[in-house]
Amino acid sequence: MARPVVKREYSFKDAIYLVEIIKGLGITWKHFVRNVKASFRKGPHTVPTCWQYPEDRRPISPVFRGAHMLMLNEEGKELCVGCGMCARACPAKCITVKRGKAGEEDADRYAGKTYCEEFVIDELRCIFCGFCQEACPKGALMLGQGYELAEYSMEACIYDKEKLLANFHEAKEKGILPAPRKKVPVEKPPAKPKPAAAKKAPAGAKAAAGDDKGSAGSASRKAADGKAAPDGGDSGEAAGKA
Amino acid sequence: MEDWGIALGKVVFIWVWALLIAVVMTWVERRGSAMMQDRLGPNRAGPLWGLFQPLADGIKLFTKEDVMPDNVKKTLFILGPALFAIPAFSAYAVVPFGDKIVLGGKEIILQVSDVNIGFLYVLALGAIGVYGMVVGGWASNNKFSILGGLRSTAQLISYEVPMGLALLAVVLLYGTFSLREMVLLQEGTFLGFLPNWGIFKQPLGFILFIAAAYAEAGRVPFDLPEAESELVTGYHTEYGSMRLGLYLFGEYVNLGTLSAIMVTIYFGGWHLPYIDMSAFLGPVSYGIASFLVFFLKQAFFLFLFVWIRWTVPRFRYDQLMALGWKKMIPLCLVNLFLTALCVQLTV
Image 1 (cartoon, rainbow over the protein chains, first blue to last red):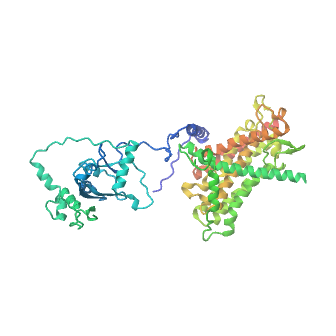
Image 2: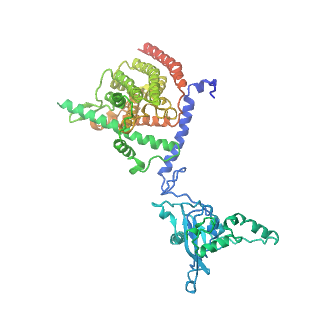
Image 3: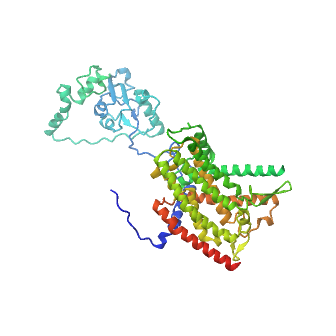
């Protein structure tokens, strides 16, 4: 819709433009001087509005959700028990876990009785929602502070257990390990409504799983047993790959 | 034979100087604009905050593929940038970039040629430079280009008149067309306390001239020929590689010329206010100092171009025409009349 040009009345001051132009020049000069002075200062991040990325890095939030890492406890034992809760929780279905039984001889390596033989995260599919971190009952999988995840090949973006542990060690060296999760006191809900809720939750998965015990636990157990079968479309999660 | 050598030396010097100014100006424009807009600008190439950026740009422009779009008028398409850049360079020929220097017992005037109509020569070349835009826009066979070219024509016609009239007052004042003589006439003081510069005798004339000069150079706020928000980039939309480079480069050379003319006519050329440098400097150092003084003044006006560009928004087309015809031309005539009156009464 074209609208007619509105005729405005200009005062003499407006009509000669000069006064306003000089005012404007003053403003740009102020900015110019401020920024030139700032760029002469020593040190990173001197010009207030610009971060010169490789040199200047913005401080990121302590709860930033970056590259994943598999945590070790204070004794250096792997926390992960390979339960597969993270894989169940993952909306992008990018986690593959294979559970293994820890023998007596592995007691100094693994904190639990079971461990993850294989732990693969496809960072290309990951959406960094942090659900895996929340789902983990042991606080073994955490999202760290790393955000420079670009690689030259797609294969390099699929993180295996080694890479995830390396992420942990790197974060530990830099002292930017995420704080261990505080234990949230779980209020015991009244006994009655709970089973009903529990039954309702897996109801969606039930149809596909066919099993009426088609809960997260059972699925991961299947995965852990290494059943290569697609498992009746068991939420298609990486169990199939194993 | 010796005169030929001197002339050649001066030509080479002025050529290199013009190029150097244009090259550094591209850097000043980009970094300066960034600083005014709270950005950083290109600061990676070379030492000293990206001073080699123009070099990198130049290499890029030279090594790019030279694309000639279909259905362009080939001869004119090639001719356009040259038509734009050559007058810009040529105008430097009459710029008195210093007083004189004594080298090897020979007194050399720091000006390529002291033409007695140097003034008209500059005006004429400024007008020819616009043909480069028009021809380029026409040859490109593109709506945006031709609109840009047409706008520059209209702009030229509107602003040649006030520019000429503003300068005419100066001619009345000095009674000469030679740029060197004009500078020589600006020595000393005016009314006892002001430097004897044209600006103090022609304040209105200077404002009118500078506005017309911005329009002539196609700079913001009068950059309608290349208004990038409306016309892509106007007359050089279809240009690429070094052809485009020549347009961009020619623009900065043009700025250099216009700044030099402003300094020459209104800001006393190589004279410092209140100080007569020739009294206490040797013949060689006086030559160099006079050049430096001229250069500093020119640098200020070059920076003013950048400064204004990132301060003032673009005029609308009808505003541009209204400003040119309804305000500037009457003011120019008033200025001319007053000047004539003053000259008549004082002489």
